Structures are given as C-alpha cells and as structure tokens.
Length: 401
Image 1: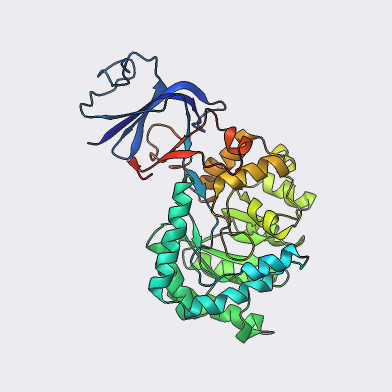
Image 2 (image 1 turned 45 degrees about the vertical axis):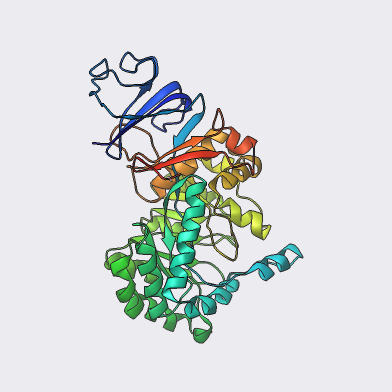
C-alpha cells in the first residue's frame, strides 16, 4: 500500500461542504482519498505522522510519505470538460486579424482541417501530449478531448484514437462544421457523420457532440447527429449559443445532454430550462477573451439555479489557452463569479459536466487528484492573475508535478 499525508493545509477546498476547511490534513492511500480532517485530530502526530487507530479509525501507515503544506491552500485537481487539443497547424494570423477588428466566424475551423489531415499520427500524438503537460503543470488532472479537425472518416478516426490513448473522456465531434468538399451539401455530410464516420469513431469515444449554430449545423441536422450517437451508445453534449441565440440549448436539454457549452447568448427561456434540468452549462471564458465577444453573465445563471462549469476550450482558433487559473481569473473579473464559485465550476462543475462524481471533490473514496497552491487561499487564483501558483499536483495519488 502507498500512502501520502498532506498536512498543515492552511485552506482546504473539498467541494464536499459549503466552506473550506482550515488547518486541515488529507490522507491518500492507493490512489484514493481515505481521510480528511484537522491537523489537531489526535490521529495526526506533532510531525504530521499518523498515530494509528485514533478517533478517525486511521490505520497505522509506517512509511507514509508526509507533505507539509506549510499553511498553503489545497484544492481538487481541475476538471477541464471541453478541449480540442488534437490538431495540426496554427492560426496566429487569424487571431491577429481579429485583434485588428475582423469578426470571428465558425468557418475558421476549416483552416485547421487541412493541416490536421496532413499531420502524421506521431506529430499529432507528440503535440497532444505537450498540451496535456501544459495543463497538468497548471493543475488540470482530468481533460475531455474532442475530435472535429478531421471531418473525414479516416482523420476523425485517427483523432479519437489518439485522444483515447490519454483520456477516457473522448468526444466524437465529426459535426464540427461542414468541410469544404461538402459546401452547400450539409445534409449529405450529416449522412456521412452518422453513418461510416460514427461507425469508425464510436469504439474510441464516450460522447457525441455537435456545433448547433448558424454557419455550422441546423437544429434538425444536430438532432440527427445526436440521436445517431445515442443509438450507438454515446452520451450527448452540445456546442450552442456561441455566436447568437438559437435552439441548441433546448435541444440539448430535450435529449438529456450532460452539458451544453458556450452559452454566450441565452434567452430567459434558455436559462429557466437549464435551471430546471440536469444539463450543465459549461462557460468558456477564453473564447470571449480571444474573440472579443461579450462575456456570459454567470451571476445571472448561478442566481437562477443553473449548474455552471468552467473549461478552457483549448483550440487553435477561438481560445488557445490551456490555463484553468487564467479562466478562473477572467470568470471572476468579467463574468460575475466569486472566486469560490469559479473554483467550484472548474473542479466539481467540470466533473458534473462529464457525469462524474469520483473527481472534483476531496472526500473519502474519491480519486486523489489534488493541487497544492503556492498561496494561502484559493482567492489568489483570481487575485494574482498570470502568476504560476500551482506548486504540486497529484493524479490518482501520484505526485506528477
């Protein structure tokens, strides 16, 4: 048995209760949280070593590694429930044009498709692992990865296969946009997506997604895609209301989607429907930062009872950041979230968007995905934007940073 005791935690965000714990300790055994409590508990000795069976019935753990947090904060590992990190090429010129006033449009995705199709599996694999290393260094311990930059059967299958090598949260997004070779033949492309492409990709995927938006796919086309994926055993998620109001949110709720993502333009009816549903709304602050679109009003959503997640949406076009701390800072400053709400949304909220209850929380029986901050409180993630505050990271109880 391997065991680690993290002690002298100044502030411990567990997400298991409304308030953080102070002067806390966490015991990790064999990749899981086995105990959470106070450093003043009689089971924890003067040097942080477990004293055997005490008030918490802790087992003696000779050889237990002890980590002294020295009054710093510990939070759950970030859960990034929306990313597109398997791709080729670069779109820096597009970003530069946007900063000069050019409007963002969904069609820019096609410029990444050619580079992705031309890249070898090894090139894509190396780049994907590089992005994962970036994320891990910034405290992200669980990542969802979408396809969507192949838009043909062969390449989409390559993308989900490479994604499945590094995460169990793989999403088939063949319906990202209509590729150039199917211009003005969107329904024919949907036929391909729900037929041969789905058949090739489903064995590697857990989720089915669609970009239900003007310039991408209509509600009718999106319904066909999602229903075909559901019939193949995949769970639905939806990109919607990024570029303008539409019916994508209502479609996501109707089909029981785990999450609907973006939500930049929501009607009152959308907000009410989300609040009454089990569908999580995933906000993506990096997109609005990069595209200069208006930020969603998270305060409105949370006050209405909507479950909100935060994710990076790492992609080469509209949000080329892999930093959850950055997204937290933006959400606090520009979207009306408190630091506590933003950290919850980036951890437990992301877990909810993936239908998971084993991550995003620090409690006995949960996976030991933990982040030690070089700061006394979680507030510093927003208070000190751009500063690398992640000091140490554990994934399944193993120190990976």
